Amino acid sequence: MAAANLKWPPVLALLLVAPMVGIASAGNIAVYWGQNGNEGTLADACNSGNYAYVLISFLTTFGNGQTPVLNLAGHCNPSSGGCTGLSSDIQTCQSLGIKVLLSLGGAGGNYGLSSTDDANSVADYLWTNYLGGNTGSGPLGAAVLDGIDFDIENGQSAHYDDLANALKAKGSMLLTAAPQCPYPDASLGPALQTGQFDNVWIQFYNNPGCEYANGDDSNLVSAWSTWTSSVNIAGSFYLGLPASTAAAGSGYIQPSDLTGTVIPAIQGIGKYGGIMLWSRFYDVQNNYSGQVKCCV
Ligand SMILES: *[C@@H]1O[C@H](CO)[C@@H](O)[C@H](O)[C@H]1NC(C)=O
Image 1 (cartoon, rainbow, N blue to C red):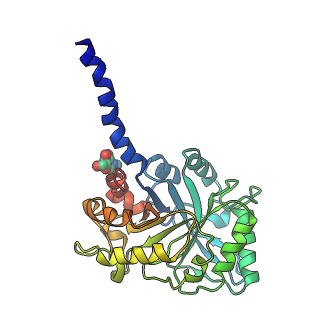
Image 2 (tube, protein in one colour; image 1 turned 90 degrees about the horizontal axis):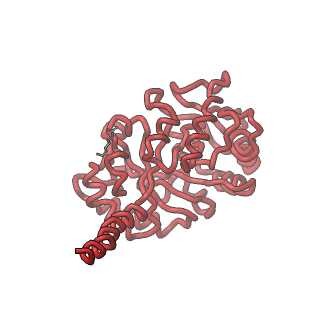
Image 3 (cartoon, rainbow, N blue to C red; image 1 turned 180 degrees about the vertical axis):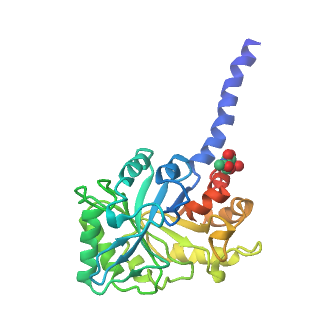
């Protein structure tokens, strides 16, 4: 009896280790937060335990000599200094190991870069207001963000390569980007050729030609192969998805299809890092990240 008891613990240990190996190799989840006042606080998002990256969205106005404008919808009003309280939320997130980035652009907004000098000015502005050069008077208070996300969607690609180069020349930071799945991206194509980006979350939604539809992942897999073999990045590629059917016009993938079919199909192709979700608001409604985080 004693011998049998001694034999069991190693077997149990193996049974416990096997699933943990799976968890250790699982992907991360990135989420956009900021465009809906009813999505809960930034600290709530981070305390959910579901995300590795939170992308504060968006800096909707910048470039062309304009004074940059942060837009956080109903969360707070940066023009009156109303968003500086987010510093403590950002620090909460960072203390949990979550990377917090500022996202530039978005589907709306008024942004564009007119020259290399203009790109350098925007880089200076971002460095002194949101990054390592922030002395405490930035729109989000004293917090130092982990990096900058490029969600450029207006088809104007000029000088974002200059902006990426200028930012990385200033100091240590993450650079990420959210191109649409048709390759190359109309707005981010040249920037992504700089080799300056860490993670790239590709938007596999509102793009019927390259997204998952009706159980068919062939267009998505084909686009994933093109992206991962055409763009050199330091980090990983993420599958960008709507967090609910209401979050995008098309491209929603049922959690079971995602974890059972789509992830297995792309995981082996190369540089897979996880999924990106638009957005925290829709994720709260649908608990998408909660349903899939075990298995992405
Ligand atoms: C989200 O789904 C997961 C997995 O089914 C579940 O454990 C969790 O309780 C859910 N969270 C919410 C807020 O419903």
